[in-house]
Length: 325
Image (cartoon, rainbow, N blue to C red; front, side, top):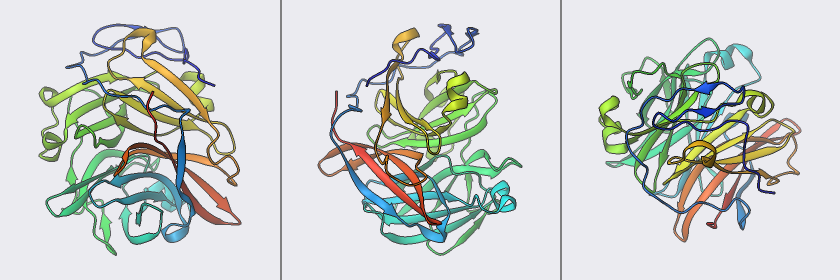
């Protein structure tokens, strides 16, 4: 059933809102309103275009995004079996068709955990945006942009990686990118402290060129404080479509939730919906992993993924919502 969140509230343009601990969260100024758009209906009809597909190297799916020009998918995977490699932040990128059939792959050394990935077809190439410069925790400390090249290995020190980390004055902990293909915007989710998540948006043309300073941001918002809710339901990915951001949360073997954030919201109106999804409920070892917007030829789709494990074979599944409220 639909459930409006009261666990943590958005903070916008100098308006203070009550967080999960009861403390007031201070907001830095937000630049501009986000243009209005339709909102996906989380209870609406859906589909399962990628069903239990094995990806390259049998690593754990963490996130995915669409090349909406060529109708391809790119999955980011991390190795959780070998703690040394996981801590180093090694990733595989698997390119597939929209049904999850492998078309190519690429290795990234010391990049991060792969929490979120963005795909940008541009000037005859396909560029990927990922977390980059892994810390000892295995999570990236910056955002890198680079061209996908099938069969190659990319080191974190490679000159092929462009640093595209926003410089807006905030401490930027664990930055994670997403692209809204409906507006041509780059969004970056990050933290300024242990439980202080935020989101900032830039025009993709500015971001591509490295114009990511305070004066270039289109909007900046505080995301809900996660508190006890976040401890029980780990953050697993995000995306955006116009006015709304969508967050995926949940743990392996437990319930999974999609939360809808109004990027123009204030106070209690900001978290406009939270839905427990039963998609993929029968998947063995089901864990939510990744969100993206798919500009399908018949209309936009909100996509969200799950990792599963069948007898040691790791698999990826993607579900979509196709209707709007």
